[in-house]
Image (cartoon, rainbow, N blue to C red; front, top):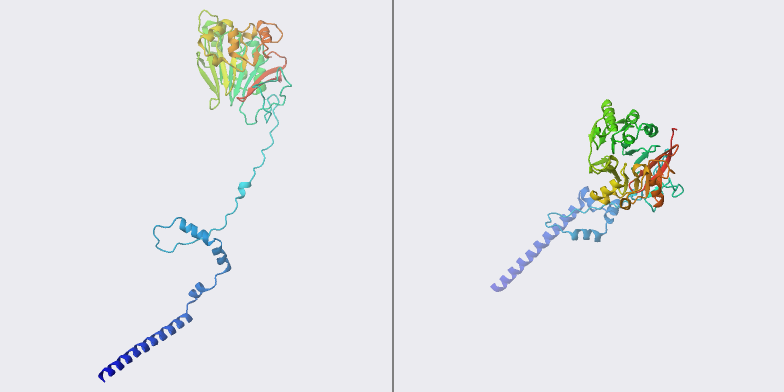
Length: 399
């Protein structure tokens, strides 16, 4: 009996525990329902359907792409959920297809100068419009090319050459009084009123006595010589003229270099013989003028003996040139070995054609085209961009 009473008590306890549990569950369910009915507007906004714009923004990047971006470089430490941003679609760069406008039309060329512009590519390096005016008659330098220009006055049996490059003006010799009158006409036509340096090859009248008339038109900044002024009467006259006009006079020697241009693109190398047995003509200084791949050799009055002597102490490669200012007005032939070394494509002769001097006969025999400086109403003009030479005659405005 006592045992049955204990069993009933145990059953009543279990039933009571079950009733209490069910009551608690009922109360919790009612609380959750009531809480759901009293949610704040902010919470409603979170649970509401997203706006079309937001939905579009979220769907703009596929989940696979986001997953790849996240899984490619996982963060070493994750302290919070990563922020996922949706970048706008890339916009095509309109400047990629932008074509710059065509360059402006070239300005008309000035009369008396080579016209600048595009041209066909020549096969030769010297465009000789003196002897072959119809060959490549439309040749033009590039419009942006920097030109070394060399002008010869209308003179004979005297030497004078005007070099211009990058705003600088040099002269190699200045002729005598008669030729200086022609030089003055050329200087005025070119608008040159200042000569930076006048280089003298030797102190003979047909290379020095034109200094005063030249200085009247274009002030000479400096005179460079390679012989003592007292060695000739012309040298003494040069000393007097430079002193009266306050023109500095300095000496240069064989092997000296000078340059033209802000970057020194054009070089002038002076070479001479010092053999006292030779006369002044054969000791006169020669000048190698070089601009990039193009060159011209001024040989002053150095004849055969001087040419042979120079080959003994000067590297022949230095003497090779495109254009040769023929020595001593072509009065004599060239020394054969010197001619082979120099190998010119054109000769400039400070004389008049048809005199049948030995030098002129040599040029004809060796089929070397010649440009003569003494042509009525014409100036001889050479120009190079460092790649090609153009040789032409330009009309004189004077008589």
